[in-house]
Image (cartoon, rainbow, N blue to C red; front, side, top):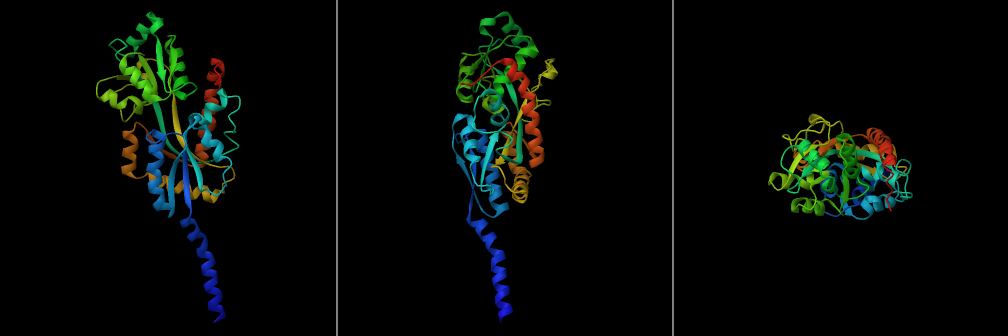
Length: 317
């Protein structure tokens, strides 16, 4: 009788953590408003992770400071894997070089968990630019320096510096015109107020398909699956490439077994053909990579952007 009693207690003790895990809610913080690419990707993987992890997983939108606010919240969270952030790489590899005090160390204050997607940028022109290919447009801008402007979703973003590198590689002085988001930039591009825009393909993809703007190049090493007809910059003789990624991070000190458990759930979500197609349709590329690979990618991007940003002299306010 006693042996059966102790066996029952032991079984209950072993079962308790699993029950508690199911009762808890994992939060994936997103530092941007609903409807944007970060939010869409987070919701796609959260839906699948609920099943894989056997617990509730919610997306918690907390927009502000281009995604830096949620990173400052994350670094103070308990290291139990129940609070995560899905962030574009800019907050991790660009912000440290342009802000005197962002409030966090991109290496020490977070635990890398999974790379989610990769993406490059589209070089798009509107009715304010002349007809023709990218070289024609750039030649026109060189001859008309007062009109040689490019729009992006904001100062200090990856598109901002991608446009700067394009300017250098093409030998044409381009003036940056930052907007408060990709949507208002795209509207001014369509309206002819600015002739060229450098930003994620998702910002102008539908307008391109509708014939309102023309995507003339992508900044990746390869053509985009969403835009197979559009050549890369390198294919057009401009020796420049730029890309970025979304990564999933936890607070510092998340145990390795917890990281691995979450990473497996992310991998399962990204292996789902339905989710893959939805990601591709958004102009992004499903590109799962482990925690170690994410850490290595982050370190490489930090190093890649340090020189160009410092050389530009740009500092955010």
